[in-house]
Amino acid sequence: MKTYRIAAIPGDGIGTEVVDAGVEVLKALAQRAGSFDFQFDHFDWGGEYYQKHGRMMPEDGRDQIRNHHAILFGSAGHPDIPDHITLWGLRLAICQPFDQYANVRPTRVLPGITSPLRHVSGPELDWVIVRENSEGEYSGVGGRVHQGHAIEAATDVSIMTRAGVTRIMRFAFQLAQGRPRKLLTVVTKSNAQRYAMVMWDEVAAEVAKEFPDVTWDKAIVDAMTMRMTLKPWSIDTVVATNLHADILSDLAAALAGSLGIAPTANLNPEGLFPSMFEPIHGSAFDIMGKGIANPIGTFWSAVMMLEHLGEKPAADRLMRAIERVTANPDLHTPDLGGKASTRQVTDAVIGAIAADNT
Ligand code: IPM
Ligand code: MG
Image (tube, rainbow, N blue to C red):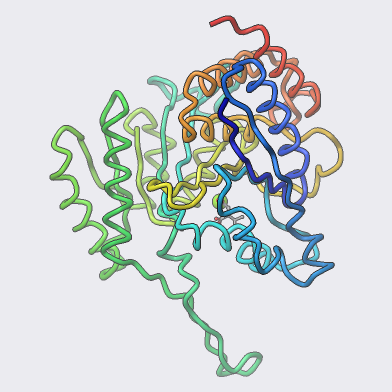
């Protein structure tokens, strides 16, 4: 029997609550499948670790998880620690060195959930946003001089490389090719940013030639926000820079009904390093410890993890269980306007896994 070693990094805030729920659900799924198993190793890295040790994860942290099959991540963020420290000290400290350059963010309106776009005609939205996850505006290049003086200067330099753009374009075209509509929108801002974004467009056009069966178009990022809200049916697969996709994916999550549902995969497609799966909602300190965090974003991320591990039947079974549970408004957490607890939703998903005879 195959045993997958999973590094569970709950992080901060509701991250601990949803990752615990995710681990329970994955264990139930393995039991139901009978053909594979999980070994979960838990790492207490994050804000509290920082307060004790002065860093978000140990110096050899990455070595401790380098040989795991995948990483299940909660969130990083702490009310008493600046956000750029928690982000760069943990999440980006894993994503970037592990070259998880493809960040994949699916958006669908799950059964029982109401999209704010319900009055817009056309089919329900079904998108996948591919976020460049290794460079661009998150390159970490920049500096600050003369702090506090009138002449203070600061830069955040966005670096784009031909290699980096080519590989994300290829990944996105391939993903679009595998979806029924074979439709890709390349988001850009090459009207205002005349170097890197122009190269981005050029590389997109070059890579497009390798995928003659994929229909593609370009959208300027500001116009893309309008298109997402007014013509959602015109979109299928989307590729965008690190920052543009960061913003668009929050919009996408809101349009799908709640940030509590949206999943993410940070992929190293070549499998040289473990890939990392996480809900996109963040730490949500306002509801921490109340037992009402929506675990669906983590469960859906677990679906993506199972697909990545090659356990497609288990992934499909978990997705069916999720959809059966979201379809019941009595099992909606407060972010969806309901009263259910994390515990109730988790139990219901575990119950639906057990009951699934497909
Ligand atoms: C995301 C988040 C992060 C990001 C935050 C927490 C820094 O918004 O995963 O989309 O900007 O990448
Ligand atoms: Mg974001």
